[in-house]
Length: 203
Length: 101
Image 1 (cartoon, rainbow over the protein chains, first blue to last red):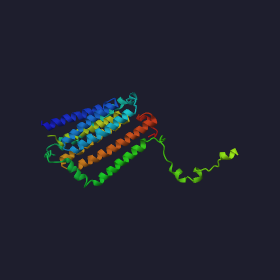
Image 2: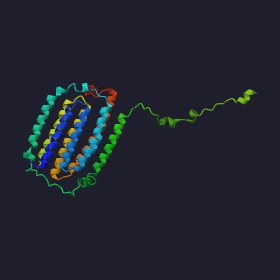
Image 3: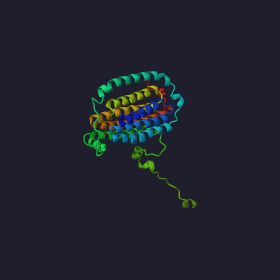
């Protein structure tokens, strides 16, 4: 057993164990933390596959932003834990049967006979001068520049949609009513009144 | 050496764990979203494994876009969740039956 295999099996064990702990966790905040552990294991496996940029992105974007967003929402909403697990046992046997069948089928299809080392040999490791970021950037800014810009537009739409959804409709702050401002006339605003002067009253 | 089938079987196991999570957590929308994240990470591992073994960087570009779309999905999903909690006072899936689907 080579050291690469030992590292792979340790990381896989942590990935599977933390995923199982995530789906069986009773507390949603604990589930998020187990998922963070799973993401770290996944990022390590990606580094084993020489995808360094994506591994760092997974940790920075997912653990740093998305999981913190999950934790933020969980802490913001006061969730009643007792009602969330009412139907827990009912669907577990069905889910386990479906999952075991899928895993058995996948193992048959993806096993060593089809994707083993004899059919698909492991490629040579890149040297120290190889830069994964350079290779990805060359592809991203030439061949895939149009999808890259579309992804930016998608993120902008997501920002606007999220803000529009959660903004309170009955606003507590002052705001302008533009149509009233445009349609206003002078006699609505200025009222001329004649005030009797006090000097005349004395006489 | 670790073969390609090891990576593929690992990601299929993770995929199935996410699927079981969706089965058993049918009442909690937050855990459902997290299970979808787990499934997406399994799929991304598939892409990166094939990208490594075939020597083609297009798979890693695809994972980049999947990460982007997943981040947008989580942002909008959690916004809808917050709105649902504000309107209904609960995020139980059983309560959200007003469309009679």
